[in-house]
Amino acid sequence: MFNKFFIISVIFMMLFGNLEKVYAIDRVVIRSITVDDPDRWYENIYLIADKDGMDYKNFTVQVGDFGRGLYNFPKWINYSYDPNLYKEDLNADKLEDIIIELVTGSGTGVSTKAIHILHQGDVGFYNFQEVPVEPIKDAIKRLVKMEQKGNEITISFGKKNYVVYYSKFGYYTPVDRPGAGSIEEYIPKEGILYGTANVFVTIPEANIGGLTVKYAWDGKMYKAESVTFEAAPYKSSRTK
Image (cartoon, rainbow, N blue to C red; front, side, top):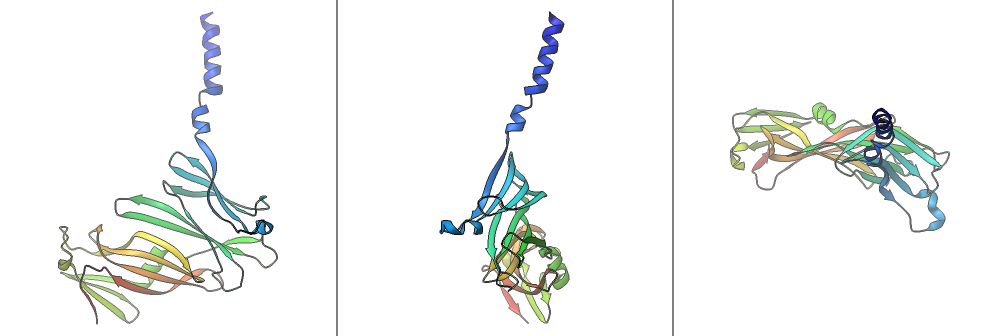
């Protein structure tokens, strides 16, 4: 009797013991962009993913209310935070593209992002294809030069040089080599994609300003074409 009961118990555990884990994963709509006209249901966009605890994974972009356009991205992962979803024409072809921003890292003074863009083809609303985007950290590394000499920090790109003085911030941490990109964001605005990142010294909390990267479509990918620097309001800066 004991052996029979033990075998039945093992089978029960194998069949039902992981139900809590299975049902903890829910397929949910995280973001959506819908139109008011019900006759234009085919223009609605839904971002769907598996919610596993605090994380989202196995993303699908659904175009239209009946799933006629499905674009699956199982390798996308968004940790702890909801992503952003946009619909805008970024390459000036008069067709709206789908833009998804995901959080890739988070913590104290850290919020890194990834950007994904689906171009709409000219053969129908359900014809979308993902295109490459230069990550903002790569764009900053390529276009921006930052130097530190004692208390003086210089941020340069092109012919522009910005000088800031670390001692005027009142941080308790010592001055060190400047860095950028611990706090990132991608924002489509009026048909142009922008990326922003903070500039910091020593640790991300020691913020001294921010960089804005302007992207352009070159026919193959979205690549950063220019950068601007904005000083934090509580610090001193000058352009030379």
